[in-house]
Amino acid sequence: MGLGGMRGGIGGGGAGSGERWRWILFLSLVSVSFLLSFLFLFLSAYSSPTRLRLPGLTTARAAAGVRRGPDALPCLAYLLIGARGDGHRLLRLLLAVYHPRNRYILHLSADASHEERRDLAAGVAAAAPAAVSFDNVALVGTPTAGTPVGSSGLAGTLRAAAVLLRLHPDWDWFITLNAADYPLVTQDDLIHALSYVPREFNFIDHTSDIGRKEKKCNR
Image (cartoon, rainbow, N blue to C red; front, side, top):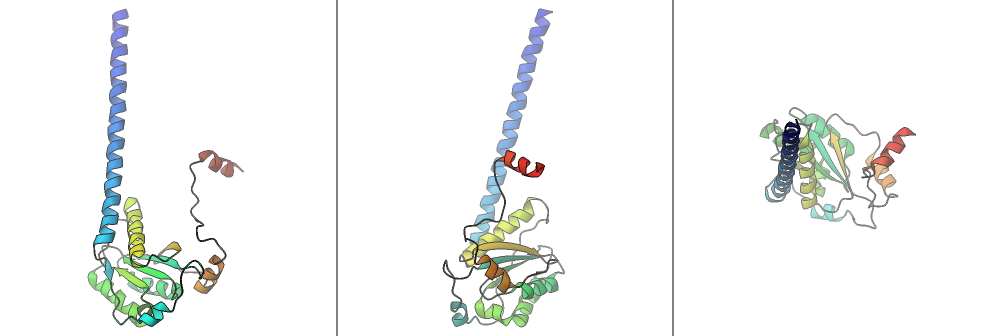
C-alpha cells in the first residue's frame, strides 16, 4: 500500500515535470517564430524594392514648398488597403483624403494582378496630378500574401509603416483606412485639430495595468 503510493507520487512528479518542459519548449518555439517573422518583415521592407512609381515628372519645387517639422502643421501618414477589384475604390478614397503635406501608401492585396496595380498608378497620376508633383503617394509593388485577419494583416501594416519611414520619415501619425471607408471630415479640419495635440501623443490605449482596465469597465 505504501509502496504503491510512493510509486504514484514519483509518477505524478515525472508527469508534471514533463508537462512543464513541453510548455517551455512550445513557448520558446512561438517566441523564435515571432522574432524571425519580424526580422523578415523589416529586412524585406528595407531591402526589397516595394515602391511602384507613379508615371509623370516630380516637381522638386512643389515638394520643397511644403514646410514640415516640429514648428509646422502635423503631417499624417496614410495606409490605404484594398483587395482585388478595389482599384477604383482606393482611388476614390485617396482623392477624398489627399492633402499635399500628408504621405500616402496604397496597398492592393497579393491576389490583385500587376496590371491592376499599374492601372491604379496611372489612375492616380491622371486624377491627382498633385500627387506626382509633391511626390507623396507610393504604391506597394510586391505585397506580401496573407489574409486581413490574424497576424498577416498586422505584418502587412507594420511593413507599410516601415516603407513609409524609409521613404518619408517626417510624418507624425499613422492612419490605416480600408477601401470601404470614407472620411467624414476634411483633411484641413483634421490637420487643424491635430495641430493642438502634442506630437508625442499616442492614440492607442495600452497599459500593462489590467486592474485599471477592469475598474474602467465596471463603472
